[in-house]
Amino acid sequence: MDLVKRLYHRFASLVHELAKFGSIGAVAFVLDTAVYNLFLLGLDWGPLTSKVIATTISSTFAYVGNRYWTFRHREQSGLGREYFLFFLLNGIALLFGLLVIGFAKYTLHLHDGLSLNIANILGVGLGTLFRYWSYKKWVFLEATEPIPVELPDSGIRQDR
Image (tube, rainbow, N blue to C red; front, side, top):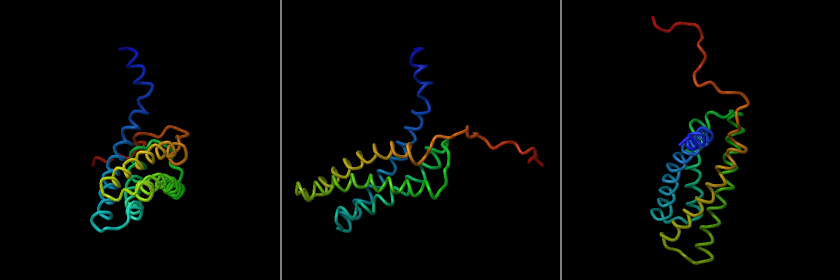
């Protein structure tokens, strides 16, 4: 039992960060899949166009969630820099999805909604692995000094 406690304390911050990243990712995945199917099946747009639109919308949600919840304890290196890198890296992750969907449709000639959704899920999985690694490495950097949990007391009393 002592070993489990030591392991937990050693990896607690990573476990919590992964849980938050997974929660944001799960909501973004549902959003991505819903928008993808809306455009693909509901509006009869092509699978690649539908994927680009769905990823743009779900990535915007994921940026806000990851910046202000998952990685809020990490240094904030400027909204412009983070936003640019976040969407650049999401563009690279989008290529994983487009390649898998394109392979399914244009190489394997799978045109049905189920096959294209399975391809989408595989692409999202590959992109998620890349995104988690790249966000930690380049977008949401380690804090160079501890970030306080609460704002410092200003000495002014607010209870009048």
